[in-house]
Image 1 (cartoon, rainbow, N blue to C red):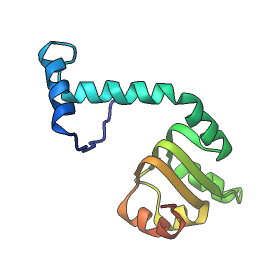
Image 2: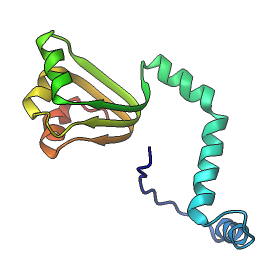
Image 3: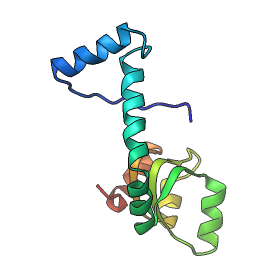
Length: 129
């Protein structure tokens, strides 16, 4: 997944200075690379905790995409979705708000949730905060 989300953090001057020194010494291309590597390393250390928590909550780790065809099939079968995602959830642009409400029972996303404004509004009462 090449798409990135922007994250803003506050650092004290000493930490920032150390990062800039490492960048200046060629250890990292820039501050952003240092921060991405540091976050990746911390997440790697906690992989078991993430996997255990997601399994307990029946969460999908990665990207989940639902389009109109899939959702119409689920509606026809009388199935409802409790979407629990760690990563990226996309409800395609071709999904109408009424179709989303008919099929989606609940939405919990730790990461990024992409859907049209009307679909997000239609699901607002079903989204965990």
